[in-house]
Amino acid sequence: MRLKHAKRRTARAAPGPGRNASIQDVAASANVSIATVSRVLNTPDLVAADTAERVRRAIDQLNFRPNRFAQGLMTRRSRILGVGVPDLHGEFYSALLRGADDEARRRGYHLLVTSGVGGKSSDGHMGAMLGLVDGVALMITEPNEKLLEVTRRSDLPIVLLDAEVNGAVRDTILVDHEAGAAEAAQHLLKTVEPSRCFFVGGPRENFDTARRAKAFADAVRMHIAARTPPRAGDTTVLGPDQIVYGDYSVNWGGIWARDCIACGRLEGAGVLAGNDEIAYGIMHAALDAGLSVPGDVKIIGFDDTRLCSLVRPTLSTVRVPLQDIGAAAVSALIRRVETPDAEPQRIRLKTTLINRESGG
Image 1 (cartoon, rainbow, N blue to C red):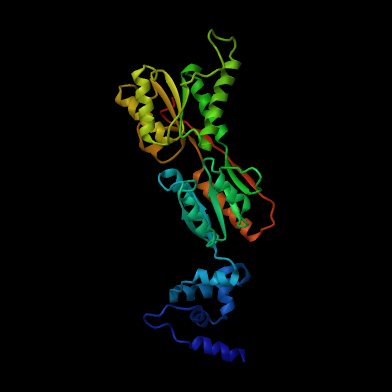
Image 2 (image 1 turned 90 degrees about the vertical axis):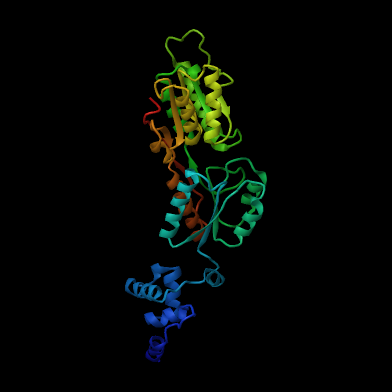
């Protein structure tokens, strides 16, 4: 009886012009059951290697494209993961999403990405996404109680990127911004007076900016407190202009630098910028004004995007493992989807000072 079925499968005609291949066509071509094809698509580890390879060849030859939504009705899984980020613009998010996509594809999943998370119009997009995916990796960069409440109440697997939510036990991927900012500040303080060290950040309410600013301020205060012997005028209170906030843009860096140049405060300064774009804006304004970098002003960025090696002088920066953040988020999310009762993870990724030319 089985032999007759096998013959029927192999005798099945290939799909004609205008008709997409079906799972039945793949089964017939590979001389296996429909259930075996389904296992190769969804749980390939349960299928013998030679059989799985035969099925994959049939899939390629027939150009078969499984309907993920139809599969989801049967398996209750779409094998689609959601990623919500505040923006898609710039190297920061591009690198993060590359890491996420590489890991998802390696593990047999697909990504559905939405931007504007935390913005006024993000709630509708997030609500629609939650009905399509197996889980969501969510980057929250600023206080947003409505979005945080969604993470507390949702039964869907959620992994938080670079944020922690009070009252919610979630898998969390964190970045050690504090260590990187402190290392950068300590590097500047080797050759720059504490009163001439500045932090030029992004938005004041941004979580990353707040962490980096605090670590910078703490490092400057500790340096002053540890000086032996103390110097006249030493105080651990930073000046009101030593930590400033704006936005993550080249334009903001240029505005701040030109204001400092006009007041004669940039020459002899050391600057830690909130990201590489701010740092480039500062450096560009300094060079336009005839100041040398790092001779007259030392500048360190944050993130280590490709911009750092493209500009001259090359930009010193704090390296954030952007692709690793995306990959770790997807890996944690798949773990949560496939093992719902697993203990929550709190993964902290390291940052490192990369000293090139601009930092001295």
